[in-house]
Image (cartoon, rainbow, N blue to C red; front, side):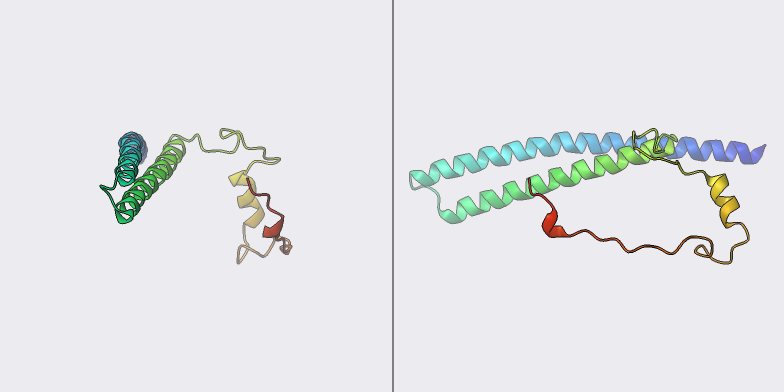
Length: 143
């Protein structure tokens, strides 16, 4: 009975940690978006001041670099929120192919896979030989 309680507590702790990480990432996105907006406004101001001679090209480049850094932080925050959200789904058991709406012919079944590899010395003993497949990057359409 103790093992069940320990597992339950571990799952609850994992879900709480994943939820906290997701909420924190969402808050970081909100504050980082404000920083991007402020950087865009600052750049517009620096460009306007440059037209009347109060700022130099170097000042414009500095403002553009700050805007680029703010946008990079925003993209990183969005990525972190995505990862945290997926971790939350995984912790709650909702990260299976059918839960995510993925079109999968045969979902993964751990018992079937165990029976398939039971007694094998290595993981590749039963699997068919892999077939090489590659894509040509020249054929990828640009948006």
